[in-house]
Image (cartoon, rainbow, N blue to C red):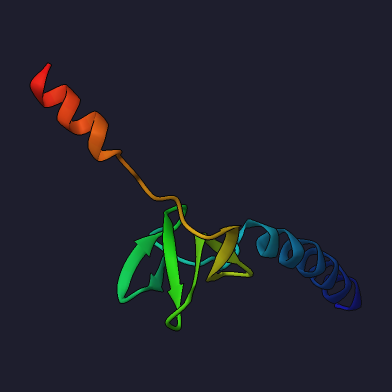
Length: 93
């Protein structure tokens, strides 16, 4: 009887760690989003964040310890500018 208990104990101690390794770790959902400027941006998306009335910077939505957060990429935001002189020259030509 003593031998049977020892054998069951040994088998039990060997099985439980194996079962623990087969369980997938808990992770955040695949469809993570950040909230910025009143919009939902998917993970990996880049936007120009407006902070207050004067501060703006380019940021990317990233995951940090299973939470989404904004990572600053650069100060300021890119803008598209077109010279009015080139626009009228292209219309005429």
